[in-house]
Amino acid sequence: MIYGVFAFIIVLFLDSLITSGSIKIEGLGLSNIWWKAILIGISTKGFMKIKLWTANIGSSSFPIGIDSIVQLFEPWLLETIKLSHFNEVRSFLQDTINRHSNLSIDDIKNKMERNIPSTLKDKDKKVFKLDLIEAQEPIDAMELYLGTFGRESLERVFP
Image 1: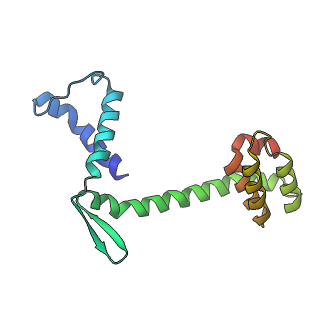
Image 2 (image 1 turned 120 degrees about the vertical axis):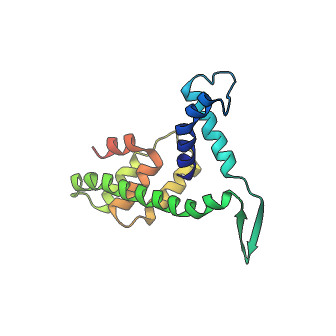
């Protein structure tokens, strides 16, 4: 998010800076707005990761420099994204659970086991089956199946 905000500010002022002659951007394909966006995005990420030194406080370390700004917001942002993902997946699966409320958790697990793609490696099949055993609720089993095999497979198995 910080990278995006910083890059957005650069894009806002880039044309006026070029027009005024303050900066000059030259290179292959840089007349294309998409290549400019990629260049600005990569440059912004590189700039924001500048670290002058690292302060060690106990067992943790903290960067001192421009990277400090990123470290203030990044953990919160990542947790917010994970929570949003969890809630969206659960909301999506609730419709499927409601349509198949007549099935027990064992029926759901059996249906999933019968629909493991044959192309999956044996090791991955074993891991999936072990994880499936741990699922106590239908929504947990369906979340596992969705995460492993994708939406198309889930909707085929549970139309």
